[in-house]
Image (cartoon, rainbow, N blue to C red; front, top):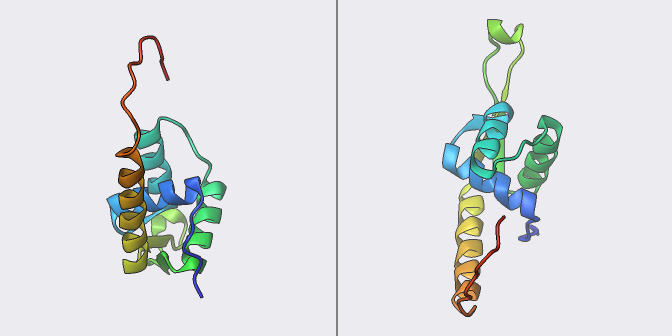
Length: 111
């Protein structure tokens, strides 16, 4: 049986992957930094991708070897239908919770 829960980093990586379609670790790192204004290491991305794949939210396959990679193949990742459905469900839940939060007047807060 699949584990349908995600940690915060898993969710963010899944969202980046959904926004990119089929892609690989370096591009995920670039997009993560672009969207969230913080860097992330490739090992951290690969750990998360392996977890997401084990849970059935991501699938991967090796591309062809390339000369620029010294004959090595890169692993391409893609969200599964289950990954997409989970992301939609998480967003629906988040929207439902946000709709119950009263608006606040914020004067001096910066993030």
